[in-house]
Length: 391
Image 1: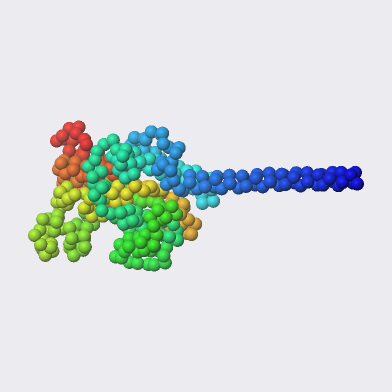
Image 2: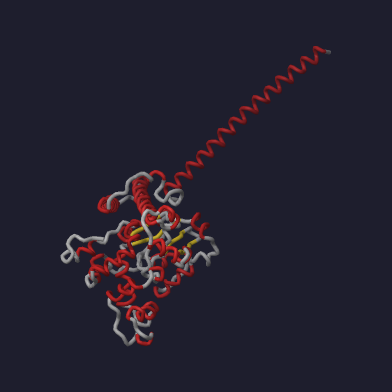
């Protein structure tokens, strides 16, 4: 009997050992699969971050934190080099390697632009860098008094996950047209201004942080003085006197006693427009000439892509590619094709005094610095009367 029990125990032991071995091998195999899948997911997420979600982490990306910023001339030369290379190569649509290479170069450019914004925000202690400011702050006071929340300046396209800070006189008409088109709506140019309300976060019943997390976040800027001259030309030099902006602000610019005098009075000059800006608190500026750093809250929320009018074609192509619009054969038009480069704006500034230009530069100084623009051309006209003096 004892011998029989020992024999059965021996067989059971061998069976249990076999089960244990089988279980161990199975568990190990499953661990390897799970580890691989998690690793693949992490790699995919990292790739997505590098390619698109630049808003994760630091504005410039971890790899650029200790990289010194290039000088203005170096940056302009680099930008021009990239854009010229794109045009000269003539990238074949079926050559994924070249497309990827060009996109990688554009990503480096956008990271650098974000790094410059971060540096300026820290310098003046703006937004989330309030406690780090090394310079003062009249700009801090202005930002604290600015009444618009970020949501006021944003347009949200939920289907395509686009979050855009509109800026008047900087391709905003084009993007308004695109947003309407993506919703299957064709509106005349006279109604494009309705896009800001139509595509607001409140209209989409979406919270700001949710839209930021789920969207490609971008805006387009241009030289601050070019935008200012363009706004004056469009709203006071060419607009009908009964137009909203003209009828509301011409009286204030010209110091007229009654709005009834506006239609009978001459149009304000650019110099008078500038004097108005210099005497009105910046936080009360209209959205056609309010500084970028206030309007788009760039020191409070992070953007994936900062486009520029100087690189508008390349920037729009990149946004179309990253958002999926290009795959859907949706092109991004530039609706307002009026010539308004620095030559045109310089003509307006020739009628200003040195004090006026200095005053304007002081207002828009954060915009100049964070977006890599210079006002040298606008001060050169005064070098004869004040040799070598710059702000």
